[in-house]
Length: 163
Image: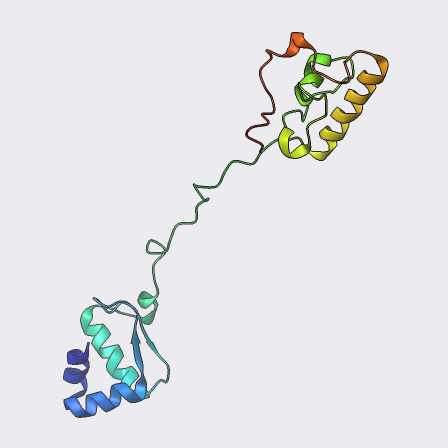
């Protein structure tokens, strides 16, 4: 680029150095002249730059602007985890469904698992806890332990790997 400007303006290397220092030329691309930005415009320099660009094949200043093909493509984050959904959303929780309710109770203590372990939304966690308490009061579910018939059921919430 220095050579092009020196050839186009017929400046000596010393004058070219002063000229560059005064104008503070900043190049975007290091290998080619795609876009040139000037902090302060000088009419003589602007004319010289236009002629140099015209000789290189650029017809107008709009061609200096980056094309849409060169811009980065908008896309979703491929590493983003899919949104977690509540397991029971869309399912009606009933106090008579003891097999479902026993999935959210500790087999050793009979305590209700918390939300951080079950992975339920707040609304469904409240419904589950109310249904479990109602089943305890009515006598459908044992209070201090999990019913042995449901011990081999698949685990909906795993205490070893809370969400």
